[in-house]
Image 1: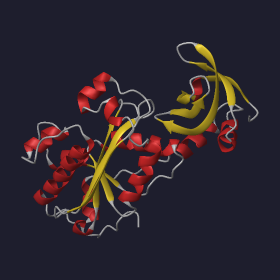
Image 2 (image 1 turned 120 degrees about the vertical axis):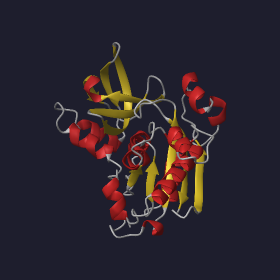
Image 3 (image 1 turned 90 degrees about the vertical axis):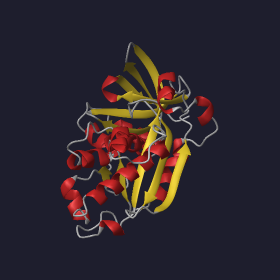
Image 4 (image 1 turned 180 degrees about the horizontal axis):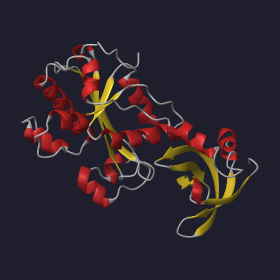
Length: 284
């Protein structure tokens, strides 16, 4: 179905409030540790919940654990992101309107995960409840989720865990719509807050490859053929790396290569503008 028609009544739509918890702030460098959502209707009825801890296959920094409370022990033995993301996409379906508070943060992590997993991007529209609150609550002290929940006297508690914050976003949307009954169709809602959508960062990455120096187009062939490449990489120092490319993605003006690094026997991400000379190798 994709996007509703402008005259679709909001009460006829399924909404999915979702949230992520991560190992850090950068979608490129950090990893998901929790993904949750709640599917609901504007009358308050909950259709279903989704909540899953994720093994990020790396350590969770102590300062990040101090924020969301998720420890290495809690995620050990949990499914990896390659299992969880397809389950989440099946659960949300193609018809639901997604929403999150400060949605670009959560979208970034999902977009990079989709690129790494070579999955197509969903067509679901996404509502940012932060943008909506700014438009409808001009007198709020600030627009952090916790502040808005307390300002509107909604159900409090359980912040910085994905399912709890999903429910806070749900309560926020239901409250805002009850305060503004004139916003009763999809078209009316779009007039108040422009919708976001998933960006295909994989295709954008391949598009940017075409404008890079001669030879970089081989990376796409290496990904398709799972052919290893060797290159010099300039980071804090220049080092030689042999990797098997997995995917590319563009993010905030840079193009990144996600690959299995033979030096560390683990997945690593490399900025393409830091790759110096490289060569294709024979498959073993």
